[in-house]
Image (tube, rainbow, N blue to C red):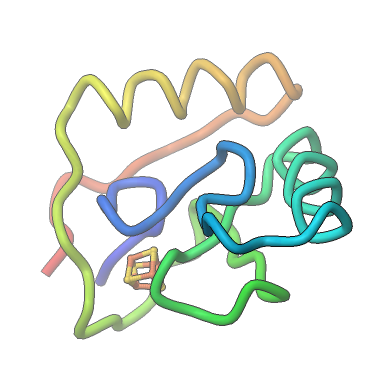
Length: 88
Ligand code: SF4
């Protein structure tokens, strides 16, 4: 099973799309502040949970340092995060 928090396609940053309009950027910022990020492969209006375990054929392992920063960010949002060892 995969978790978005461990995936290189996930982002808790501002809207990654260069063509995003101001409203999309503002929404992405607000959602990130709530601890929800975006899958850069999915539609801009979807904010999948970072820790929900899912079967995802597009999962791509993110670097450990990136995952650690995400966990730290979520902790500042009051969210304890448990990441799974395996994402297969
Ligand atoms: S590719 Fe799959 S696991 Fe990765 S962020 Fe998107 S939905 Fe989550």
